[in-house]
Image (cartoon, rainbow, N blue to C red):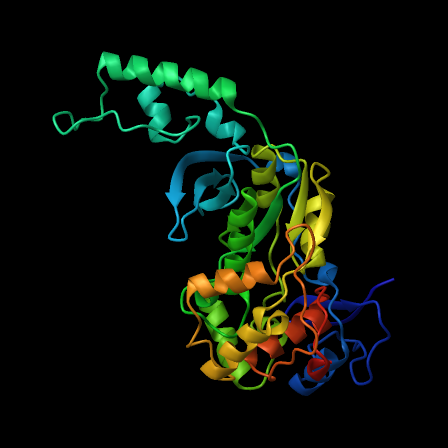
Length: 374
């Protein structure tokens, strides 16, 4: 049974473990000193239930796919990008969908008084579009012949469409500007997104639900503040809590609604985070039939480990090309199982390693740490 150890900045800190020395709850329940708090963090393994915000019931979450578009990739494949609106926030959450057998119910629903052109513009079409306009006709309105042709083509494509038969790979990914755009070495978010995309493109099917909850839910501004605290010696968990935030403030109700809208009931989830599985399955409509680990490239591939080391032990500034990253991911990944760990691989104790060690030790993430990080 969990018990409250103390209250810090208005948040109850709980644990299933005995109360560490020096952190007994005071009668007046005042925040401990920073020294006491650091001692507590050194001994505590975080329980996700202690820091996760209240989950919003599925019945209260409303989402709608507003538009879908085909995105060809520089690697030669393609995906469909679905944009969602919801009643919980003003953000535009996304689904990156690989394969033709996954479609949105809310997108396909016929809107009042819409034309075939309206449906095409918002991406509610089947199959592939054809270039039917000419240089002489650059208007949004179709001719009668063009409209009749597209209507017939859509009827045939809709009749030929078949839903996906096997559970697809799914990644629920939270936006990370620092990791995805500027290649920060403080996290592995960017390479997790790259890995998921490469695996799904190779498999020909899969879904990445891309949620706009930067910094484990605290936003980019607060995340950058936390980075400054990390440079003073605090880890990623301590920095968040000292800024009056939970260690992980993310919820996955919108992700659950999006997967339901995409008509998925069983998934192979790419994650190291047990709280993600627990939250998703708590809604009762989606079953995680398999978990696939997201192993850092520098831990799973000797070649990638050498490239990262050559780029500098504390920076991600000299990352290999996307094509090499994709090759390394696929060469070291079994699409029917988990990524294959190479034997004897070791990595320097750099910033990424420190971050991952904290996620395992304090946040309960499921990942085998290298011996030098134990």
